[in-house]
Length: 154
Length: 83
Image 1 (cartoon, rainbow over the protein chains, first blue to last red):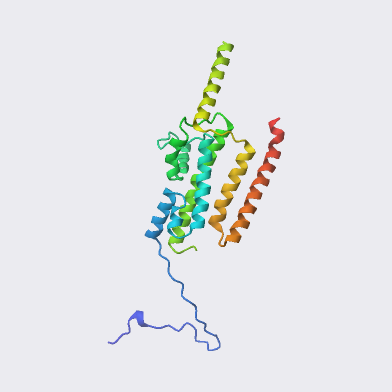
Image 2: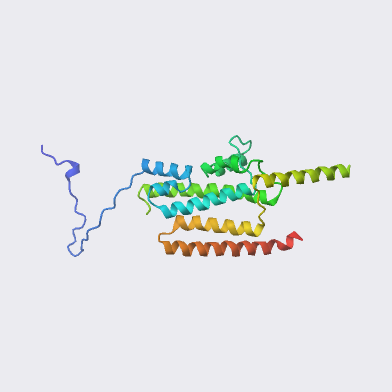
């Protein structure tokens, strides 16, 4: 018995001759996970702007370096609170994740802010927000670097 | 007792001031801090979202202006509660 395999059966899409058939360009399939993107994201997180610099987006790299570095350093100069890794409560842990988003600037805090934070004044409280905002912006830039390296963004 | 407390506070302020001078602490008022925050966040958001250089510049200026306007507006709304 000679049967045609199911994969070779051709089903006509349109049998109406009046319908004009146009060629639809096939969309290139994007990889679900990109190791190159992961590398770019890690670089972008570790040193703000480095991931974009490696990808040849030097203007974006400069913008992220200036904005993340500026926010973090101003936060340190205002003596904002830098949350430690072993925070006791959930807010402290969230603060640590936000602060650690600044990458290398998290470790620079010990050199810039030698005497520790001072949140008894409004400036110190503002500085805490500056540092957290710097971390969140840098995490966004890491996601952006991943998307560029994976070919989903220009 | 009050005198001792006053001396302690004075010493603390002096120590804080000395420590600030030693570490390069800069006193920034609220408005200057808001301007700096608005400027740096606007630059980052423009770099994230826009395609061309002109679009980025326009977005950064627009975002900065909105940050400042909304910040000053909210400050005026809260002004009666501070007195």
